[in-house]
Image (cartoon, rainbow, N blue to C red):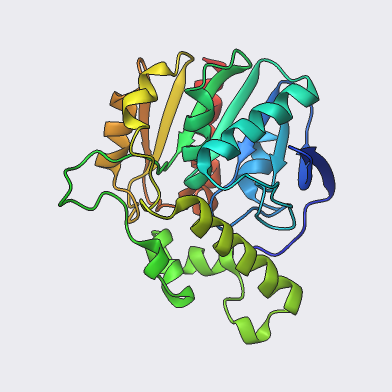
Length: 266
Protein backbone atom coordinates (compact mmCIF):
# COMPACT_ATOMS: atom_id res chain seq x y z
CA UNK A 1 0.00 0.00 0.00
CA UNK A 2 1.56 3.30 -1.15
CA UNK A 3 5.07 1.99 -0.76
CA UNK A 4 7.02 2.38 -4.00
CA UNK A 5 9.87 4.93 -3.89
CA UNK A 6 10.08 7.59 -6.57
CA UNK A 7 12.99 7.29 -9.00
CA UNK A 8 14.68 10.70 -8.79
CA UNK A 9 15.76 13.27 -6.22
CA UNK A 10 15.95 17.06 -6.02
CA UNK A 11 16.77 19.61 -3.33
CA UNK A 12 14.12 21.75 -1.63
CA UNK A 13 15.24 24.29 0.99
CA UNK A 14 18.53 22.44 1.37
CA UNK A 15 16.98 18.99 1.88
CA UNK A 16 16.79 16.10 -0.56
CA UNK A 17 13.32 15.06 -1.70
CA UNK A 18 12.34 12.16 -3.92
CA UNK A 19 10.69 13.11 -7.18
CA UNK A 20 9.24 11.59 -10.33
CA UNK A 21 9.08 13.31 -13.72
CA UNK A 22 6.95 11.81 -16.49
CA UNK A 23 6.07 12.99 -19.98
CA UNK A 24 7.03 16.07 -21.99
CA UNK A 25 5.46 19.42 -22.71
CA UNK A 26 4.10 22.20 -20.52
CA UNK A 27 5.17 21.62 -16.89
CA UNK A 28 2.52 20.32 -14.49
CA UNK A 29 3.26 20.16 -10.77
CA UNK A 30 1.23 17.37 -9.13
CA UNK A 31 0.85 17.66 -5.35
CA UNK A 32 -0.14 14.37 -3.79
CA UNK A 33 -2.67 13.53 -1.08
CA UNK A 34 -1.80 12.70 2.51
CA UNK A 35 -1.31 8.99 1.86
CA UNK A 36 1.65 9.73 -0.41
CA UNK A 37 2.13 8.97 -4.08
CA UNK A 38 2.81 5.89 -6.21
CA UNK A 39 4.73 5.82 -9.53
CA UNK A 40 1.79 3.89 -10.95
CA UNK A 41 -0.97 6.38 -10.00
CA UNK A 42 -3.26 6.23 -13.05
CA UNK A 43 -4.16 9.95 -13.13
CA UNK A 44 -0.47 10.85 -13.27
CA UNK A 45 0.01 8.49 -16.21
CA UNK A 46 -2.98 10.10 -17.95
CA UNK A 47 -1.64 13.63 -17.45
CA UNK A 48 1.84 12.60 -18.62
CA UNK A 49 0.44 11.93 -22.07
CA UNK A 50 0.14 15.70 -22.61
CA UNK A 51 2.34 17.37 -19.98
CA UNK A 52 5.68 17.11 -18.26
CA UNK A 53 4.35 15.97 -14.89
CA UNK A 54 6.57 16.74 -11.90
CA UNK A 55 5.62 14.73 -8.81
CA UNK A 56 7.63 15.24 -5.62
CA UNK A 57 7.01 13.50 -2.33
CA UNK A 58 6.35 16.46 -0.04
CA UNK A 59 9.12 17.20 2.45
CA UNK A 60 8.64 14.78 5.34
CA UNK A 61 6.61 12.29 3.29
CA UNK A 62 7.82 9.07 1.66
CA UNK A 63 11.60 9.13 1.55
CA UNK A 64 11.84 12.94 1.35
CA UNK A 65 13.78 14.74 4.04
CA UNK A 66 12.04 17.54 5.91
CA UNK A 67 14.17 20.69 6.05
CA UNK A 68 14.77 22.27 9.44
CA UNK A 69 12.05 24.80 10.18
CA UNK A 70 9.55 23.39 7.68
CA UNK A 71 6.71 22.38 9.98
CA UNK A 72 3.60 24.23 8.73
CA UNK A 73 1.59 24.21 5.51
CA UNK A 74 2.84 27.75 4.88
CA UNK A 75 6.44 26.54 5.11
CA UNK A 76 5.67 23.80 2.59
CA UNK A 77 4.20 26.31 0.16
CA UNK A 78 7.29 28.51 0.25
CA UNK A 79 9.52 25.44 -0.14
CA UNK A 80 7.68 24.59 -3.36
CA UNK A 81 7.98 28.15 -4.63
CA UNK A 82 11.73 27.81 -4.07
CA UNK A 83 11.72 24.53 -5.99
CA UNK A 84 9.94 26.07 -8.99
CA UNK A 85 12.39 28.96 -8.98
CA UNK A 86 15.36 26.61 -8.75
CA UNK A 87 14.04 24.55 -11.66
CA UNK A 88 13.37 27.72 -13.67
CA UNK A 89 9.76 26.69 -14.35
CA UNK A 90 7.09 29.09 -15.60
CA UNK A 91 3.62 28.66 -17.12
CA UNK A 92 3.10 25.77 -14.69
CA UNK A 93 -0.19 23.89 -14.38
CA UNK A 94 -0.79 23.23 -10.68
CA UNK A 95 -2.81 20.13 -9.72
CA UNK A 96 -3.39 19.01 -6.13
CA UNK A 97 -5.41 16.25 -4.48
CA UNK A 98 -6.87 16.43 -0.95
CA UNK A 99 -4.00 17.60 1.31
CA UNK A 100 -2.07 18.38 -1.88
CA UNK A 101 -4.97 20.54 -3.11
CA UNK A 102 -4.85 22.49 0.15
CA UNK A 103 -1.13 22.98 -0.46
CA UNK A 104 -1.86 24.03 -4.07
CA UNK A 105 -4.33 26.66 -2.84
CA UNK A 106 -1.71 27.99 -0.41
CA UNK A 107 0.75 28.24 -3.30
CA UNK A 108 -1.73 29.96 -5.62
CA UNK A 109 -2.76 32.67 -3.13
CA UNK A 110 0.84 33.82 -2.82
CA UNK A 111 0.53 35.47 -6.21
CA UNK A 112 3.31 33.68 -8.04
CA UNK A 113 3.29 34.51 -11.75
CA UNK A 114 4.63 31.02 -12.45
CA UNK A 115 1.18 29.36 -12.53
CA UNK A 116 -1.00 29.17 -15.64
CA UNK A 117 -3.98 27.22 -14.29
CA UNK A 118 -4.96 25.48 -11.06
CA UNK A 119 -6.89 22.24 -10.46
CA UNK A 120 -8.03 21.44 -6.91
CA UNK A 121 -9.33 17.88 -6.43
CA UNK A 122 -11.35 17.15 -3.27
CA UNK A 123 -9.42 19.82 -1.41
CA UNK A 124 -9.26 20.33 2.33
CA UNK A 125 -7.78 23.42 3.97
CA UNK A 126 -10.72 25.73 4.67
CA UNK A 127 -13.37 26.23 7.32
CA UNK A 128 -16.75 27.25 5.89
CA UNK A 129 -19.23 26.18 8.59
CA UNK A 130 -19.74 27.61 12.08
CA UNK A 131 -17.76 26.48 15.11
CA UNK A 132 -20.30 23.75 15.91
CA UNK A 133 -20.20 22.22 12.42
CA UNK A 134 -17.59 19.67 11.35
CA UNK A 135 -16.62 20.45 7.75
CA UNK A 136 -13.90 17.80 7.45
CA UNK A 137 -14.09 14.20 8.69
CA UNK A 138 -11.67 13.34 11.49
CA UNK A 139 -9.35 11.15 9.47
CA UNK A 140 -6.88 10.96 12.35
CA UNK A 141 -9.35 8.81 14.26
CA UNK A 142 -9.53 6.39 11.31
CA UNK A 143 -8.02 2.92 11.57
CA UNK A 144 -6.33 1.36 8.58
CA UNK A 145 -9.30 -1.00 8.21
CA UNK A 146 -11.68 1.96 7.85
CA UNK A 147 -9.69 3.69 5.10
CA UNK A 148 -11.32 1.94 2.11
CA UNK A 149 -14.91 2.84 2.98
CA UNK A 150 -14.13 6.38 4.16
CA UNK A 151 -11.95 7.44 1.22
CA UNK A 152 -13.60 5.54 -1.64
CA UNK A 153 -17.12 5.19 -3.02
CA UNK A 154 -16.63 1.56 -4.09
CA UNK A 155 -15.10 -0.94 -1.66
CA UNK A 156 -13.81 -3.29 -4.37
CA UNK A 157 -12.13 -0.43 -6.25
CA UNK A 158 -10.67 0.75 -2.96
CA UNK A 159 -9.04 -2.61 -2.32
CA UNK A 160 -7.75 -2.75 -5.89
CA UNK A 161 -6.16 0.70 -5.49
CA UNK A 162 -4.83 0.21 -1.97
CA UNK A 163 -3.60 -3.35 -2.22
CA UNK A 164 -2.42 -5.06 0.95
CA UNK A 165 -3.65 -3.39 4.15
CA UNK A 166 -2.08 -5.90 6.52
CA UNK A 167 0.93 -4.43 8.33
CA UNK A 168 2.10 -7.91 9.31
CA UNK A 169 2.42 -8.84 5.65
CA UNK A 170 4.27 -5.65 4.67
CA UNK A 171 8.02 -5.28 4.56
CA UNK A 172 9.68 -3.09 7.19
CA UNK A 173 10.41 -0.51 4.47
CA UNK A 174 6.75 -0.41 3.45
CA UNK A 175 5.56 0.04 7.03
CA UNK A 176 8.12 2.81 7.57
CA UNK A 177 6.96 4.65 4.45
CA UNK A 178 3.32 4.42 5.54
CA UNK A 179 4.26 5.65 9.02
CA UNK A 180 6.26 8.62 7.69
CA UNK A 181 3.33 9.70 5.51
CA UNK A 182 0.95 9.47 8.46
CA UNK A 183 3.37 11.30 10.76
CA UNK A 184 3.91 14.13 8.26
CA UNK A 185 0.19 14.51 7.61
CA UNK A 186 -0.31 14.82 11.36
CA UNK A 187 2.46 17.41 11.67
CA UNK A 188 1.18 19.66 8.88
CA UNK A 189 -2.54 19.11 9.37
CA UNK A 190 -3.03 19.07 13.13
CA UNK A 191 -4.66 21.76 15.28
CA UNK A 192 -6.78 22.94 13.63
CA UNK A 193 -7.47 19.71 11.80
CA UNK A 194 -6.68 19.95 8.08
CA UNK A 195 -7.43 23.62 7.58
CA UNK A 196 -5.88 27.07 7.83
CA UNK A 197 -8.31 29.51 9.53
CA UNK A 198 -7.05 32.32 7.28
CA UNK A 199 -7.18 30.54 3.91
CA UNK A 200 -10.88 31.06 3.12
CA UNK A 201 -10.47 34.86 3.18
CA UNK A 202 -7.38 34.64 0.96
CA UNK A 203 -8.78 32.47 -1.83
CA UNK A 204 -9.84 35.60 -3.73
CA UNK A 205 -6.12 36.13 -4.40
CA UNK A 206 -6.08 33.21 -6.87
CA UNK A 207 -6.01 35.12 -10.16
CA UNK A 208 -5.63 32.29 -12.70
CA UNK A 209 -8.32 29.97 -14.14
CA UNK A 210 -9.20 27.37 -11.54
CA UNK A 211 -11.10 24.08 -11.65
CA UNK A 212 -12.48 22.69 -8.39
CA UNK A 213 -13.15 19.00 -9.00
CA UNK A 214 -15.03 16.74 -6.59
CA UNK A 215 -16.14 13.16 -6.04
CA UNK A 216 -19.92 13.00 -5.70
CA UNK A 217 -19.65 10.48 -2.84
CA UNK A 218 -16.84 12.18 -0.93
CA UNK A 219 -17.27 11.32 2.78
CA UNK A 220 -14.28 13.35 3.98
CA UNK A 221 -15.36 16.73 2.55
CA UNK A 222 -18.79 16.87 0.91
CA UNK A 223 -19.56 18.28 -2.55
CA UNK A 224 -21.24 21.23 -0.79
CA UNK A 225 -17.89 21.97 0.85
CA UNK A 226 -16.39 21.91 -2.64
CA UNK A 227 -19.01 24.35 -3.89
CA UNK A 228 -18.07 26.76 -1.10
CA UNK A 229 -14.42 26.38 -2.10
CA UNK A 230 -15.16 27.22 -5.73
CA UNK A 231 -17.40 30.15 -4.80
CA UNK A 232 -14.54 31.73 -2.84
CA UNK A 233 -12.22 31.73 -5.89
CA UNK A 234 -13.10 34.36 -8.52
CA UNK A 235 -14.31 32.73 -11.73
CA UNK A 236 -13.59 29.16 -10.57
CA UNK A 237 -15.40 26.26 -12.24
CA UNK A 238 -16.92 23.50 -10.09
CA UNK A 239 -17.32 19.97 -11.47
CA UNK A 240 -18.48 16.70 -9.89
CA UNK A 241 -17.51 13.15 -10.87
CA UNK A 242 -20.15 10.51 -10.14
CA UNK A 243 -19.37 7.20 -8.41
CA UNK A 244 -16.26 8.72 -6.84
CA UNK A 245 -15.22 9.27 -3.24
CA UNK A 246 -12.50 11.41 -1.67
CA UNK A 247 -9.88 9.43 -3.55
CA UNK A 248 -12.08 9.24 -6.62
CA UNK A 249 -9.11 10.12 -8.82
CA UNK A 250 -7.83 6.61 -8.05
CA UNK A 251 -11.14 4.81 -8.67
CA UNK A 252 -12.28 6.94 -11.63
CA UNK A 253 -9.03 8.19 -13.19
CA UNK A 254 -10.41 8.38 -16.73
CA UNK A 255 -13.38 10.52 -15.66
CA UNK A 256 -11.16 12.86 -13.63
CA UNK A 257 -8.62 12.98 -16.45
CA UNK A 258 -11.28 13.87 -19.03
CA UNK A 259 -12.58 16.79 -16.96
CA UNK A 260 -9.06 18.07 -16.34
CA UNK A 261 -8.22 17.77 -20.04
CA UNK A 262 -11.34 19.72 -21.03
CA UNK A 263 -10.50 22.48 -18.54
CA UNK A 264 -6.82 22.78 -19.44
CA UNK A 265 -7.44 22.86 -23.20
CA UNK A 266 -10.41 25.27 -23.06
